[in-house]
Image (tube, rainbow, N blue to C red):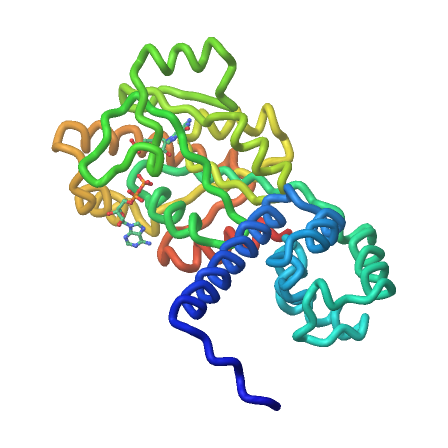
Length: 291
Ligand code: ADP
Ligand code: 5GP
C-alpha cells in the first residue's frame, strides 16, 4: 500500500465536513425508512444519485426496517451471500434482485401496530410506566390534550398539550379526539390523527388514560388491548399519591375517593397488571404488544 496523500489543513477540514454531512444524510434516510416514508426500492434508487446513501452499509439499511432488526439482517445477508461490510453501491444486480424478493415475502409486509390502553386508579404509577415506555423501541406514547394547568415539572408538548377550555371545546366540535373524558374537574382527550398515523406506520401505541376514556376506545377500536394497572395494596396507593406531592390535601382526598370507584373497574379490562416494579410492568407491556 502506498503512503496516504498529504492533506493541507483546509483539505482535511473539508474532508471531515463532508464525512459529517454524509453521516447526517444516512441518519435521515434511516429515520425515513423507520417511519416507512422510504421503501427498499426507493433507497436503491436514491443510492444511484446520492453518494452518501450509496455508501450506506447494507447491514445498516436492513436493520432500519421495522420488523427486521440486527439478528434477521445478519441472517438475511448470510443467506444471500452478502459480506457484512458491503455497501449499497457495491451490490451486484443479482444481489439487488434477491433483496427485493426478500422484501416481497408476506411476513415482511407492514403489520399495523398494536394499540394498548393503560388505565387504573390515579397514583398507581401509569405516567411513570408511560414515561419509561416512551424510550422503548417501536413504542409510541400518545400525548393527550388537557384543560388542567401544568404541574411544575411538566412541559407542554411532552407531558400534555395544555389547552384552554375554548380550545378543548373546539377540538371536540371538530371531531379531533379518539376519546375524551372529564376527570377531577378537568377535561382530557386523545388526539386521534397522531394515533392513527403511528398505528398505520406499524408502531405500537400506548394511551395512558382514565377508565371512561378506555371504554370509549374499546368501543371505537375493538382490537385495542385494555390493560388495568393495580397497586399492590390500597395502603401503597395512598402512600404513592401522598409521596408524589403534586396535589394538596383536599385534591388528594378527592383523588382517593375517585380511586375507590376506579379500582372496581378492573373487571372490564382485558389484562390486569400489578404495579409492584415499574420495570416488570414495562417488560410485560412490550411482550403484550408483540403478541
Ligand atoms: P398515575 O400516573 O397513575 O397517577 P404516577 O406515575 O404519577 O401515577 O405515580 C404516582 C407516584 O407513585 C409517583 O411518585 C411515582 O414515582 C410512584 N410510583 C410509580 N410506580 C411505582 C412503583 N412501582 N413502586 C413505587 N412507587 C411507584
Ligand atoms: P393527571 O391530571 O394526574 O395527569 O391525569 C388524571 C387522569 O387523566 C389520569 O387517570 C390520566 O390517565 C387521565 N388522562 C390523561 N390523558 C387522558 C386522555 O387523553 N383521555 C382520558 N380519558 N384520560 C386521560
